[in-house]
Amino acid sequence: MQKGFTLIELLVVIAIIAVLAAVILFSVVQYINKGKDSSIQGNLAVLVPAGEAFYNIGNTYENFCSGNAVTNAISQMPENPSGICAGNDAGLCCNVIENGSAWMACAKGFTDPTKAFCADSRGIKGIVSIYNCFQGVIYMCNLYSE
Image 1 (tube, rainbow, N blue to C red):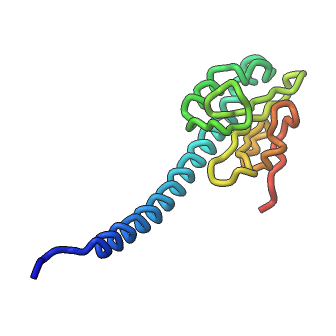
Image 2 (cartoon, rainbow, N blue to C red; image 1 turned 180 degrees about the vertical axis):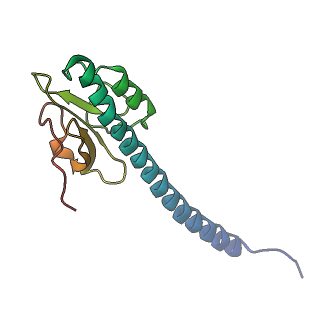
Image 3 (cartoon, helix red, strand yellow; image 1 turned 120 degrees about the horizontal axis):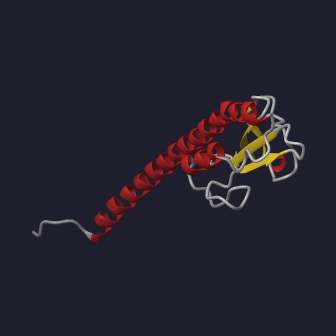
């Protein structure tokens, strides 16, 4: 009598291991994306007091979006190739109204492709529709009522 495993037994064990690995990988990716979303929200929240400090210096938000605060926030955000605006790795949109009296910044999240995170010069921070976040469309965050 020979000892060992048959080919069928080995295939069944490999299939079970593959299914378990797929389930674990899917769960891990969800948590990684939630972490990326938290990073986006945190970096956008930092822009609100930075914007006020910028305004207090020159009484305008003109050039705020090209300033150090926004540049630093972008460098801390996760890379998002499917981001909303081109020109930076995070896909962050930052717009200043023509007269320099208001600004808005938003970035697409990772967990829900229809929503983006937004912050503006009024101190509003939250979630907006991705379609309201394209460059030049709005200058204030019109939040979902959740």
